[in-house]
Length: 201
Image (cartoon, rainbow, N blue to C red):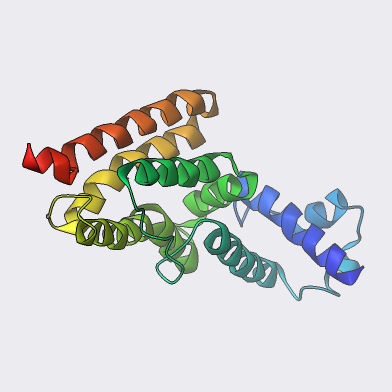
């Protein structure tokens, strides 16, 4: 029961932080939204700051278990079709998973106030994705699927447009299907352009 209440507090905190930011979130309103009194929240968390840091810890674990990270890289694809399918799975999770969407919005708001939020925003938006695909592309080059090139530059060229379209989905959710179609078209174009077969033709 106590664990349940703790998780409910964290879930409500994510909702409020992603809408109002840290400073705009009031503990009294947070607990009231759950039908709790302030004193009952303090049985689980000493302060709003502790809620914030616990929430970040949980969100990091949630994201890395489902999406991947440099420490938990997805398997290197065995074909160009697998690269396309893997990309679309990752993008679909990123733009449609409610927890991830709220986390991205929260980090976008808080990156200018909180150093940890800033570092996570950098890690999960431009840097982490590029670093993961650097390793994936290096592995695909070793398998003879992609032509030899600088894998880091190739990863940057691949992930930057995709990241931009993911942020478009956050700003204008009604354009999500259109953005997903653009990402898939871009992924296929990239594969045709950089495949080892294209290099040999």
